[in-house]
Amino acid sequence: DTAVSQTPKYLVTQMGNDKSIKCEQNLGHDTMYWYKQDSKKFLKIMFSYNNKELIINETVPNRFSPKSPDKAHLNLHINSLELGDSAVYFCASSQLQGSGELFFGEGSRLTVL
Amino acid sequence: GESVGLHLPTLSVQEGDNSIINCAYSNSASDYFIWYKQESGKGPQFIIDIRSNMDKRQGQRVTVLLNKTVKHLSLQIAATQPGDSAVYFCAENIPSSGSARQLTFGSGTQLTVLP
Image (cartoon, rainbow over all chains, first blue to last red; front, side, top):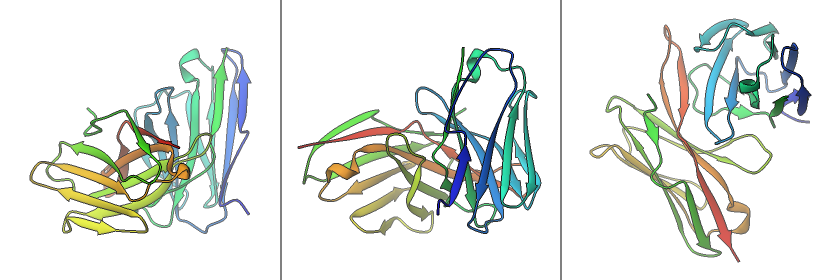
């Protein structure tokens, strides 16, 4: 069983479209995250939820909206996609907020044409 | 700005040799550091962590050294194997908004193990 699973793995779409990426963790963790990795492999945190509550909201465009329906799920919705949104988006979870040990999903590669 | 950085973007080593990957940080108040490994097409994976009350920590074939005086840490991999080929990130666990903490990742070093 995959601990942190995210779908879809690949997403190719046109500029201006709206898309969502879903994430689920079966580890019973309290905290979930979204990270963005650019073409140079730089990883940057976008959001973090702890027990369904948004606790970290980095400077990202408000076209990005996370949603956590329950502790095991954290979805990312992106409106009006732009070329610069092309990246690999990683979902992660940790047992507690503040833990240095994050469990990452396999990533969702978004390509905006 | 980015407070965690790496000295070398790429490192090639012969199979069986030891590898050393370096990382510098700028915030002297930083107290918790973590190393991650990212294989091609996969998400980052936790390797080992170290807190500022230690200067060395060992795991299976890996050792992390922390030098707080010069704000430098390194990851040493003993007897490097082909499966060690990956991008290695050092990360810093820092305070975020409120009482939250977050991981800030460095830019990564690509380790290539040569046969």
